[in-house]
Length: 312
Image (cartoon, rainbow, N blue to C red; front, side, top):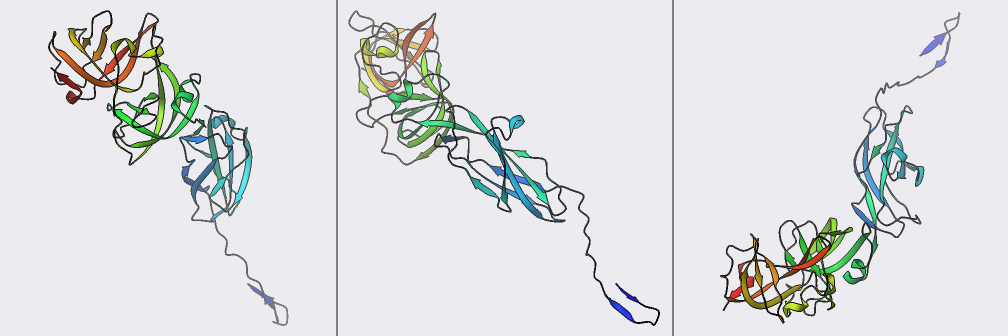
């Protein structure tokens, strides 16, 4: 634009604009809070993608809470400038508490987007051993690393401490790693049907040392102090082997043992194509599980497949 005076002399040029119209807010996508679990070191991390094709994204802010409704209760809204990630440190994270992260963006005309909220990351305690984990109360979130998978049953699996001399074992309520692999696993401790279980698990598997060797047990030791009325060392969760005489059991089960020195052990036949004949002698390998009825916890042996049952 330029103007002229009465003598037709120019008074200079002026440039305005260009003017852009932006009637929409920025769009935040791919928000990743590195969940579903983190250790309780006080650190949280997130990344995201922001876009605004009309006027661009000029600033991002994040906030942390324990629900989408209380964003900012843990960390108030904090700017990352034009950066699309952040890492916090020094937070007081409570084991078992889930933290959600909200992110919003501002475009070139000053419009803020509605916050996008992550699915949440649960703080977990890193525990040194399965024994230590099983000693904790229910609802505690824990993280175990480099544990050997002793058996996998499709909808759940078992981990143990040590490949040859198993020390302790634990049921994990979900996931399908292969037996013999190493896993890092996080989850929430619970007691299900008389047995400690890691629920809502997140598993990362890697090549491991192979399937552990079963521990041979006399029937009276099966379960140990993990079941009612047994004072032997707990072996619930371990891969064990027993031997004895077959007796008929409830539908889907058979019994092994039956003498004073060899009490009955209930065997779950759900992974078997057939059950051994009553009266035959057998060797059975399987995971020592447990079940509760009327406040009494009893052991249940779960063979992995037909190869775990040998009749002789």
